[in-house]
Image 1 (spheres, helix red, strand yellow):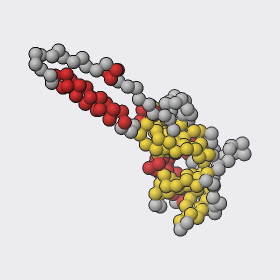
Image 2 (image 1 turned 180 degrees about the horizontal axis):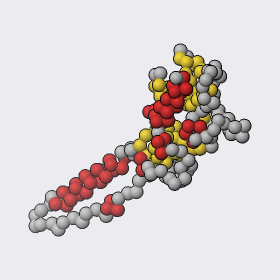
Image 3 (image 1 turned 90 degrees about the vertical axis):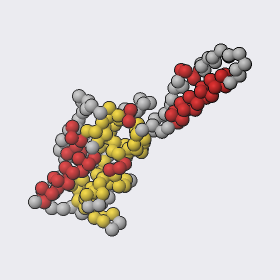
Image 4 (image 1 turned 30 degrees about the vertical axis):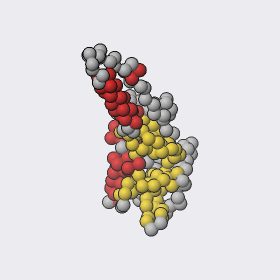
Length: 206
């Protein structure tokens, strides 16, 4: 998670000069000091407000550094579960797996996300699973590696797709660029990708 720091406003190092005293007037210096202290307190309160942002899960999908907001996720599994294969499904559909009282589908999101073919022997194998969606509208995504959960500030997200983006605009929600210069991650529109994966499975069933 990137550090958050704030620069002190320049005016804080030089308080307002007190207005010259009128004869017999001993209140004006105090008023000026009070105004300064009020401004100081307001500035400090504003600086202590948490930065705007959201928590994201960082992960790798076929060597592509990705991120999805926690709002679109249900759970992270540290392994890739064993599945029961289904007939007449695309190569990226591994099958069904049992999770407590549910049967969920496990897919490889890379072919749809990256326009890639089925994983070859040279591709890194998936090691973890993230559950995306809710209720019956849920799929397990087998991913290469799961990283940290981090707070991504709004000002750390570039919204315009880079010219070198390797995914379709429909799945691109931004580019996380950490303020500390760390690894960049493509923020996915997880709901669009989930909808398209489920639609492709429904069309194959039909």
